[in-house]
Image (cartoon, rainbow, N blue to C red; front, top):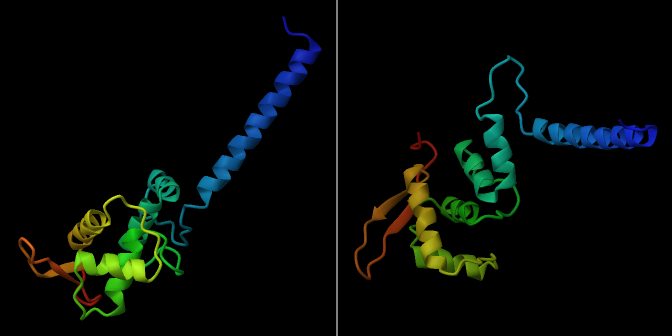
Length: 155
C-alpha cells in the first residue's frame, strides 16, 4: 500500500509527464497546415514530423510543394543549393564537377566524403522529380550536363 508521500511523488511525476506530452503535442500541431475549407493536409502528420526532424526530408517537402528552397534564405542542404544554382540561370548547363566547384567557391559547407558522388545522386533525384533534366548524356570522361526544367514545362 502507498503512503501519502509516495502518492504525492507519483502525482508530481504524472503531472510532469503530462506536461511533456502536452508540449510534444503542441510541437506536432505546428506541422499541420491550417485549412479553411476542411480539406485534409497534403501530407500526413507522420510525414510532417519526419520532415521536421530530417533536413533532407524538409528539402524534399519544399521541393514537392514547388518551392526552390526550404527557408527562403541561403539553402542549408545540398539539394537546396543545387536547385538554387540550377534556377539562377535555367539556360546554363551544369556538370557535377561544375556544381561542386561553384558550391566551394560560394563557401557552401560540403561535408561529404565524396562530394562528386553526392552531387551526382542529387542530380539523379532532381531528374526523377522533373526539377532538372539531362541535356547531354555523357559517357566515360565526358560528363552529363544538367539544366533546370523551366517552371512552365514542369508538371
